Length: 304
Image 1 (cartoon, rainbow, N blue to C red):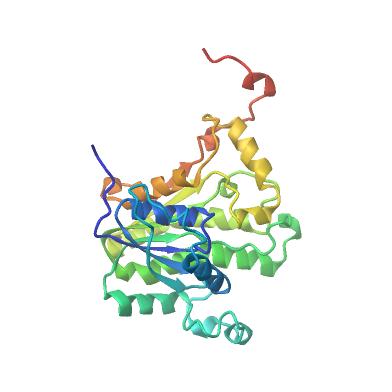
Image 2 (cartoon, rainbow, N blue to C red; image 1 turned 45 degrees about the vertical axis):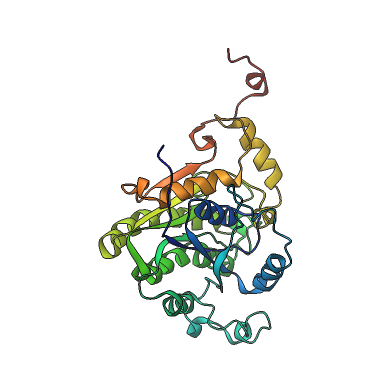
C-alpha cells in the first residue's frame, strides 16, 4: 500500500465556519491522514461556529473513519480582507462581532501562530475563502467597489497568505487554494468580478509557485472543484441547477462529494506530490474537459 501519511504535520485551513463546505472537508481529510489541524474562521460567524461545536451539533460530521473525533488544535478569528489592523476601518473595529476578537488580520494570525507554536510550525496552508458582494450582478452591472472587493478578498488575499505564512512553513510545505472553472470559461450568473478573481488566483498560483518555491521551498497549487451546494455557493442562487447540469454532462456522470476535494487536497499536501507545483488540479468529474453539452438522446444511448 501507498497511504497518505501526514502524521507530524500541522495544517492551517482558512475559511471554515461550518461543516458544509470544501474547507471543512479538506480539514477533515487532512486529519484522517494524521495531520493536526488549525482553522481560520470569519469573525462574524466564529461565535456561532464555536457554539455548534461545543453543543455537539456537528458531531456526525466530526466523526473520522477510524472512530476518532475530529479535533481542531486551535481556531483563529480571521478576516482576510485585511493584512494588518492599520487596514481595518474604524466601523469594523468597533463592530460588536469584531471588537473582542483581538487581531483578526492576516498578519495578526501569523504573529499569534508564532506565539502558539514557534517560528516554523506549519507544513500545510489552505486558502478556502472568497467574497463577491455583487456576485449576482452581471459583470457589466458590477460597481468598481464590488469588483475590487472580489479581487481583494478572493485573489489578493492568497498572495498575502503566501507572503506572510511562507516564512512559517517548513521545507517542502504545501500551500493550496480553491478556484472554479469560471476563471477560464463563461458561467452566466457567476458575476460581480468573481470570474476575474478566479482567473487572477490561477495566474498567481503559477507565479507564486516560482517565487515561493525559490524563497521558502514550498509548493503552491490550486484545486478547481466542481459545484457543491455549500452555504457560500448557495448565495449564487442557481447552484442546484449547476450541480445537476455538471452531473449530467461530465465524463463521470456522478454527483460531486466534498470528500473528493478533501482527498485530493490531502494528496497534494503529502510528500507523494513533492514534484507537483504551479498547477490547477481539476476535481470535477472531468467536466472541464467537455467542449459541449451531452444531448438528452446521447444520455440514453447504451454504452456497451
